[in-house]
Length: 158
Ligand SMILES: [Zn+2]
Image 1 (cartoon, protein in one colour):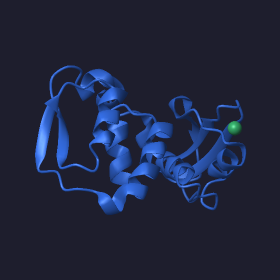
Image 2 (image 1 turned 90 degrees about the horizontal axis):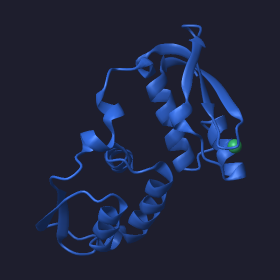
Image 3 (image 1 turned 135 degrees about the horizontal axis):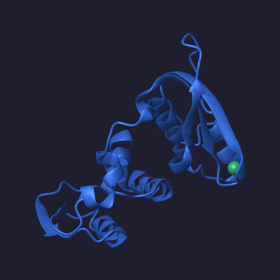
């Protein structure tokens, strides 16, 4: 799941969409075919992915060429290392309902944030209060607006 998620996320797909696809993938796993042929296609956003999905049970895969490459789609991934690599921080992740989840981690914010994301995708309400909120209210956090707001105690681990 992590691999699947990170690959799609790196290609500009949003989390809700990935979660929906992943459910389909799990349901179809038994019938998955090995790809023996690949089609070269320009990247056309979700249409490309729907096409890929529709080819799921075939031996045909899709290779993306030309058009908008990943760098054009998601330039932010390739710019400076941002503060998300800071460890030992207090951070805030706003929800779509405008409530703001505040947490603290001794590890890198990027790692903890991704744990929240994965917990929400898995409906894992044990490891993340944020996931519990999202599960209960069917909300989705605005991860694009998450930020570090302070320096935490270095001994504090989540
Ligand atoms: Zn909410």
